[in-house]
Image (cartoon, rainbow, N blue to C red; front, top):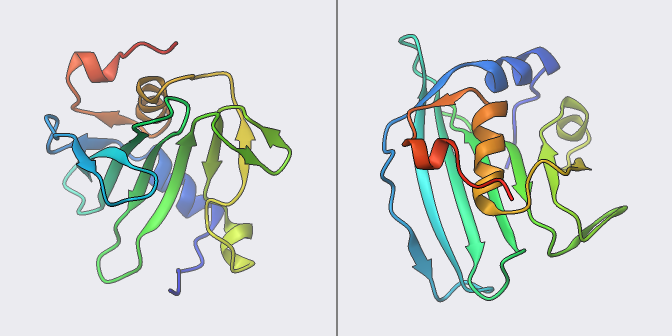
Length: 157
């Protein structure tokens, strides 16, 4: 998979652009064949203001480990490879120097240029401890609007 070399300014623009959820009542589906077994739901979003940029926001929860979760946002460019802009992960695993602590992966120009996963870099955070909290942080960080009040303001801890 060849990913376009995005500039830092382009990545910032994708992060800051207001996004509206098109399917705020997205349903959870269990993935029993996946390992580990998890439940997932996907939201579709578009950039506000008549632009055609499309995004997917997902929530994924391991059904046997409450600390094993991921909430992420992908940019879906027309005719190009999807780009994961960020992932908000639970504390179920180690990531480099981050040991069993919630962390946020963000796409960077450097990672893309080096041929690594665009969102391979991560930083520990105390902003969330649950999947609901991760979604609330993502909504804030990526200017997402259109979720129900319960999902826009979930329990952070």
